[in-house]
Length: 462
Image (tube, rainbow, N blue to C red):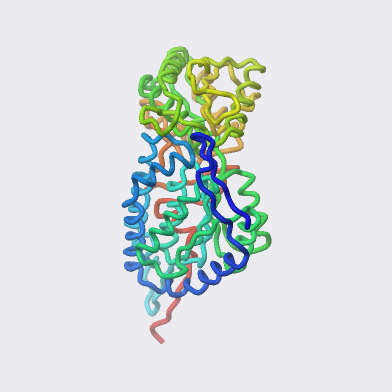
């Protein structure tokens, strides 16, 4: 029987092995979802919310063990993994709290002799395909609102983080969700594509690479179902002349290197006004050198390994190519003893003298490297920020909120930050443009793609 093997980036050992679902098991899961969806849809919203709340509580009851598992599965330092469950809780509870209002009937102006309203109907079976880098934070965006809205859910998690799916399944069982309402499957890409193409699948929530998003589209084929796609990013930051320099440095170093840069909304390129450029770069390099790269199970470590050696080698290749093209790396890898070629342990790199002819400034790195460019002002910064195939977030550092709003309106992006970065506010829509994908999660808008409008036009007077 085919199986998945999770290799821990911490020490290269096999952390866990799981059999992949067989064809009969996949068919049984789809049949169970089909059988369960009408009953779950008919369950009153308050009862659905109560059951999903119990599921969330059951997951959070194991938060300490979950945090340790995350470190071993994907390499984030143990001092930081508990933050994932705090974010999970914030998003889950927010989406449940706003569900009654977000899912309420929408009534147009009154019309004599008629009762008219729009109801938000669940779609049916939502197939969630979740990644490894923030395995709870990405999946909760789809799972909790999908269930609250009356959909049944089938979850496929990354082979790097299979225990996340199993934790969800345990929590659903502990909460007493009806059979078939929430299920998980460990599958390969081919079987995932077959599930997407199956007539019983009504919507797909996918977080991953651009090529993965294209594969989802191909699997949907000629079927008229939707897909929410959160794909790549090359998120920029712009430090204006009026920025608080110390705050910008501190936040942007964290935004670039947290989770070893393996974040879809992590900062990957920075543009700094020429009047602050030299001091910003100096401060950025100094703070970067204080990071400790090493074994993520050590509580003193704040920079762990990348998810696998091949990912680290990809970033090393980007850096080496940029240096050959004229970039300078201001952090000597020798400063970080754990950095070693052929392993997932990669020192953070700060590159200057970069330009957009270099892949490191245009191609998603998804690793601990940042390029910093000097700009003359807002117009040049906006032009460079928009020179990307991606558009997830953009961060502005300035003391002028009006200017931030004006500049933000010009940037091709899903979210505009001012004086912060790399954060999802569950009260706001999480969305992107261009090759970052389509659709929106979180906020009341997150319920829209998980439901369809159904209009009622009732003539009450004859």
